[in-house]
Image (cartoon, rainbow, N blue to C red; front, side):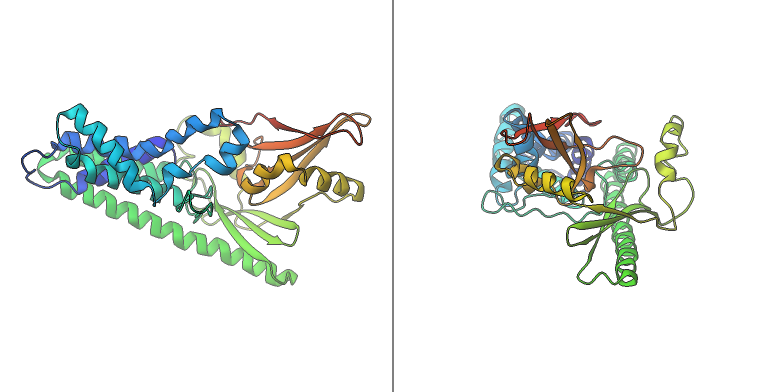
Length: 348
């Protein structure tokens, strides 16, 4: 999820769990909600690690130690101490809101497709439920509505915040059901083609909870379809200024149109070159990062070549892909060097 949505969701949780009558020395309601907001945004401070190396950050560091359940109590303690000093209160007064805020952030990232290292630094396994797109206006809108209602109805603020959280839980339940429907489409496709051992992977897409990318992985080939589980423009697409995204949205269809993506290309010479570039030691962080890696293209004149790869998680119709990395060399037999292309996202 985007950082603002994380912060707002943690603020909503802090408001919903605030006691009706704060004990002496406890933070005020405003301080508690502010503490939740700050704690909800805190884990994304790992963006500072990008300065070390972009690919290492994407593959190893992003959503790592600051998103770890094992380290969450320690981060909450640090935040509680800082907030306590700023507000002139003891640190334990803010430990609860800080812990809840960090936990809410972790939960928000787990439901996306990127992957969160819940047990860092002991394990680099990433949890990724792939239920919501990284920017989901409906998800954010439900949270914002709960906070606004709690602010407008101070006497019933806790009830309004709780109602917002229940609505958010209901929306996530809807995403779970839609995820299963998309997975069923992939499973039926694999069964129809007799793809033994194939695995369907539904990935959420922008603008609508009914937009899904379904990837069926089978050996070194990915079968991809863009599916619309509820035909017609979504509420977001009807908003002013969204017309230039109409073509992107039209790529999602109730009747899946499948495309095949061989991981290393289809031509024998192309495959050999792509495999060589893929296996380079300098490409290990991209191999760790990419879940559905495919050859994007091969550039070059004469013997000079650049072999580019993308992860199908980060491709969208009618848009340049994000996180495009490759290996380049000046001539056959020359050393490969790591390269990357700038994409449409600021994080690229």
